[in-house]
Length: 410
Image 1 (tube, one colour):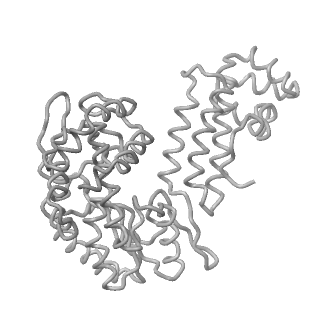
Image 2 (cartoon, one colour):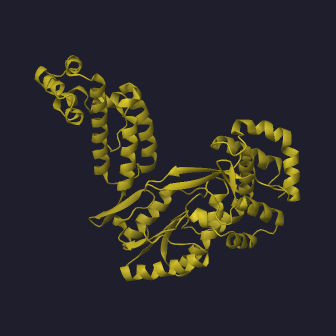
Image 3 (tube, one colour):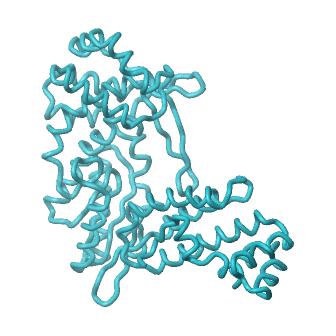
């Protein structure tokens, strides 16, 4: 705990919390107010941490939609609690991380989701063409506090540290002004939760390693690669036993022993051909991109085409930063064409009438007959967006000049 309250550690924690931004907790304090608050109460905070009397406030309950239509529950700690959690993480992380499995990639320094995807791809390339895809049922909500604290106590001797970690685990959750006690779970939203998840699931990693299995894990997403369906079923039974021992449950509806190209992993899937395994964007990730583009290109927004393209470009650059490692260009090429069609349709909708569209198309170099054809069908938005006149007026080079990135390689 002395390391946690050291000036340099608290300063680094404050910088990280401010950099991460995030919403206020139940007390309404923002990250911009944190420096002044720490200047006023820093000594009292240190004294409580050293004495083991610090009491976290309840977390603020927030829900966000999941791609499958459900909701994910987040618990947003107060800014001061986030500072304390971050300071603890900076002390505990270096103690635990070096002993974690090399096949665990989630929320670890120097590792990323791309590392996990590359490792999975290599297993498939090596002939392990069956996957045991394990989905944990509401993992962060079901973490057993006693089991987790037992794992932490093996490496933490400072009882003050153990007490405050448990206090963060049991801090209530506030929703609509009502605080509900928590007896299990480590809510997503605090800096400590990912480390605690890795501490608990490292137990499963060690069992898989001891049996020589090829696996890759990113937080609570775990895939084990085997050579046959029968071997996969044995591994699934093993995972069931080990996770039950940790008081966790497998979501039977979302878990399976299957071929890797029928499953998704961290937004990716795989394709085999010509003796080579290639990375591909998973269909659900494509659907999610389309949903976002539909929102940005909605006619009801009232934004100009140039403004919309700027916003779409920002989103696509972020998307490419993650999915740009895909090796199958066809889905991305199809997305490029679909996005440009959406933008052409938006422009036609903004022109509203054929009498407006015709002179605009002619001014953009479209021949008379082609401009007439597009203008006559301007109310059939999607049809008109694919017409020769719309393509000639707004070709790929037109969108290139306006800064729209392409998802597929040129």
